[in-house]
Structures are given as C-alpha cells and as structure tokens.
Image (cartoon, rainbow, N blue to C red; front, top):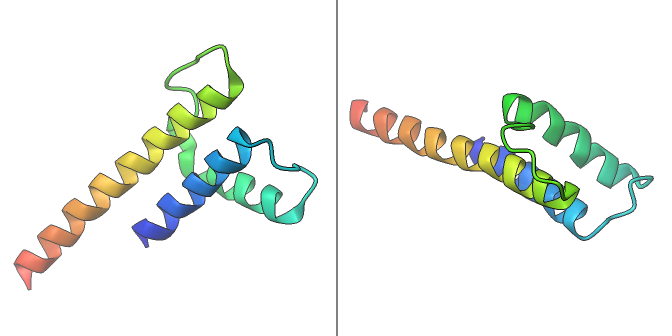
Length: 80
C-alpha cells in the first residue's frame, strides 16, 4: 500500500515538473490523489518556484510514507 502512495506522489511530481497537460483526466486524477495524500506536507517549505515547491513538499510526503511504511512492515515481520 505504501508503494502505491509513493508512486502516486512521484507521478504527480513528474507531471508538475514536466508541465503535463492539466486538462488531461489522468494528470488531473493523479493531482487530486496526490493533494489528498500530501495533506500537511503541501506547504512545509515555500520556495518561489512552483515546480520546486511541489517536488520538495510532495517528495517529503513520499519519503515520510516510505519510511513509516518500512517501519510498520519491519514491526509486523518481527511480531509474526
């Protein structure tokens, strides 16, 4: 599950950085899901460049999901 969340955030970052067509349904879907998943991380840093803003903040959210997911998997494996 964590991998899916990280992939959604990563794809959104790529779409923003490479200026994907925001009118496209796929681009819109990834953007909407990424906004939901990034919740409190969307404005941790506020650089002047919008692309850097998305890359840093959504990247931070992806990193946190990845680390927390790995910790949970490790704990579950030890308990089993």
